[in-house]
Length: 432
Ligand code: SAJ
Image 1 (cartoon, rainbow, N blue to C red):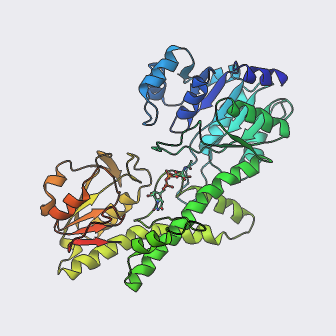
Image 2: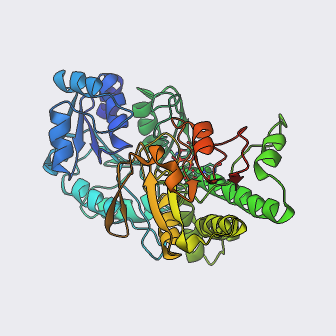
Image 3: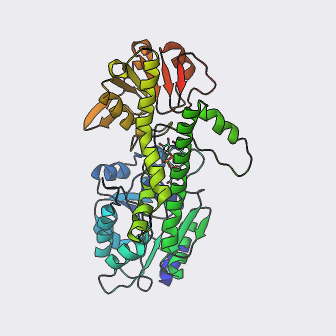
């Protein structure tokens, strides 16, 4: 055990990271930058080939950085999980999606821990980073690792540390985002804290793994609930005939006790739509009804339908039927200025629009192709040159690279669900 502490302080600890995606790769690069030898463990052979060739497939990580670290032998990748036995610390960064039933899908965690278990040896530090319900590390991971003679907290160390990667954030990265760490024992916490503290500016130690697991879920449930509140505010403002964007903007002038969130066509991404349901699921197993989580989920997932209904009303007011209209949907990514379409509400909006009978194209400079109900849809690159061919342009993702003033000027009708046209006036312009 003590050897591990010395290996960490001497930056000699071999670090294995399972899952080299948008969480694992930036973390691996940060440890390698700090002089640790890092091995990425992947099931995707292409990712292994890329990393060994010094190529980055994550927007936030430049290929030049991966190439330099690979050349120095500080960063490599492998499909051979048998090499886990050579690692002093293993950090699990695999996806935790939801099943269709909105129950947690921890199958990727289970598959990873099964591999760790095969090659587990005394002195290793095992850390789970995947977002999951409170209790996963102690109730699921620990027993799986203790099937042999090794005991957690005695023969090996076990901790949880939530990932806080914000794709596309130009200001916050792994190094300058505080890292929360909770171990099975105080010693586990201390070792995990020492490891992260070697390369991350601030580490916050909490009591145990459950606390660390819940911290992450609180962070993202806080967002989902507040976004849900603002979506309901949008519905109320529509009823009241008021501009929700003006109301929120003015409320945001309050320098204390207020934090603005904004309505939209729904919520997307790999965190906010999913994380609160991990907490909700756990609470239901304890016979507790998580009302805020359920309510926010219901309101947020009703927004695609609401914005399509609103568009129908706007077109009707012009004597047009949505069912016989040509619509250009601007945006497919789940949030502005990134290319990730995962769980994007834009997909739901497109499906609902087409269900009315409308003919729909989409244009998103960041998302050239999108899977919609099993069909690959292509972004219409020429759409901005043919705006007048559309009865309506619907802004669903507010990419800042688009000239919305020009779009409003050249379109017959614009429905903006994201306030991308803030400050722009036009008789043909409508906002959520
Ligand atoms: N959204 C709204 N209104 C808002 C804010 C967001 O409708 O006021 C929508 C976005 O358009 C998007 C979804 O919600 O579709 C999620 O947006 P997000 O800003 O939360 O972005 P994410 O999903 O990339 O969230 C990540 C999270 N990071 C981690 O989990 C490590 C979240 O905790 C961060 O706070 C967030 O980035 C961030 O601040 O950018």
